[in-house]
Amino acid sequence: MSQNRKYLGMTSTQIGILVGLGVAVCILIAVTAWLMFGGNVKLPFSRPPENTPTPQMTPTLFVIPTFTPTVTPTPIPYEQLIPNGWKQFKTTLVELWLPSSFKIADKDSDEELAISGANSSSSLYRMRVIVSYEPLTGDSLDAHLDAGLLKVDPQARLVERRKVSLNSTEAVRMMFEMRVETVDVNQLVYVIQDGGTVWFIVYVAQINEFYDMLPIFEQSAKTFRVVR
Image 1 (cartoon, rainbow, N blue to C red):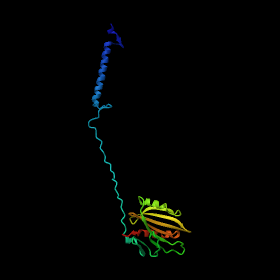
Image 2 (cartoon, one colour; image 1 turned 60 degrees about the vertical axis):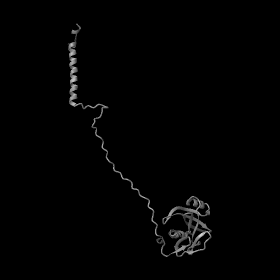
Image 3 (tube, rainbow, N blue to C red; image 1 turned 135 degrees about the vertical axis):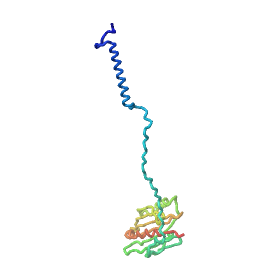
């Protein structure tokens, strides 16, 4: 009797047949969709196709830095350093040139060369040029000068100290301001190391004449050389 019971006007056999037909229709629709889209549906984490294109590297242009070597200046021939009309001052050890108005002067025992200049009528201090030398002490020229500056008269004020080149010869340039009795004077000093010997070329003038003479002093220092 239970087999003949009806649901929604249909028997259970009819309902079973209807469900089976529905499942069959769903399967048919799924297969049709697969065939239509060619199986191109991609799932996450799926293996990439074997013909994945390889990214091409585009070359990047760059400029190789150019190495610039340090150029050592070529010394000017000694004769070209001497202005016309200048006079030579020479000993058995050194040579120096100055304008013809300068003359040999009396020197102290520790001086190799002493020269005096012609001063103006208003000058209270005679211009002088002194060349002297002493043995190198310490590990370097700088150490030698550091020790020597400790012995300089406290009234002499060091206003400049720097390394320079005198026609490709390394030197130390120093400038002092000082007072001699009642006169203010300036002193320009060039220091050159020659092996174990330290040479001093000193130019001294009253302050009101010093800066006028400074270009001449600087040119004169270039003419200093040790006689070989």
